Length: 272
Image 1 (cartoon, rainbow, N blue to C red):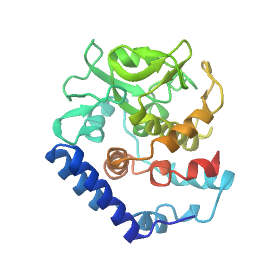
Image 2 (cartoon, rainbow, N blue to C red):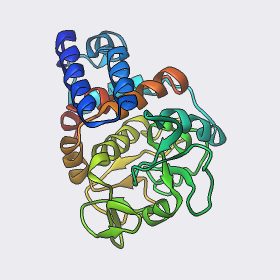
Image 3 (spheres, one colour):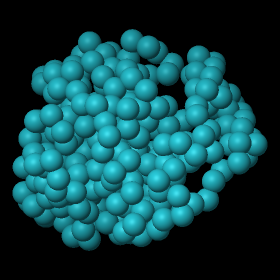
């Protein structure tokens, strides 16, 4: 396993902070700098949380990561509302959350099922494996995100792929009869959420064995695609400060497990 030296991590944090300072409002910049400097270093995580994955690749790495991230706490589906208000809080406005597909900052209190509200999007569509909203994959915060009700309805349970027509009200997102393409800024987020689910849920504990494949129109099978496109998206859109902070909040405050592909995006290619 390759480790990122602490000095390199701090330098990277400084570069990221400088970019934020030049491109974002001061409140957002200050939050990003604070979050970056307070995160656990990659070396600390590798020596502790990921220690049992040391030196592994391929199927052995996937198995080790499954064991590591399966040690988790859970939340109920009703508790997801409150959790998302913290995990996806707008760094520039603590009264808002950021919607996954639109990227809009909307009031936390505008959650529900009506037009203009945000609801709880299962990025791994719950019908793919028919796990519903039962505690487990149906409530796992690592793939649940705030999404505009109408846009969530357009996505439905479609697989992920490139192409299609622009989604009304959500610039940069595209869809066709059997697939959905998110905006560029969250393509990697979507990929890493899907791959987390594939490692976490392998058929044990009464849950379906979730696996990505390289096709679309998977229906109710415990599969989602396209894997080759998800791999491309993960490379194209590496983890940013928002995604990293979200991973930390889930780990610290809720489930006490991590998405390993946010901490080590290179593991995507190692496993798949």
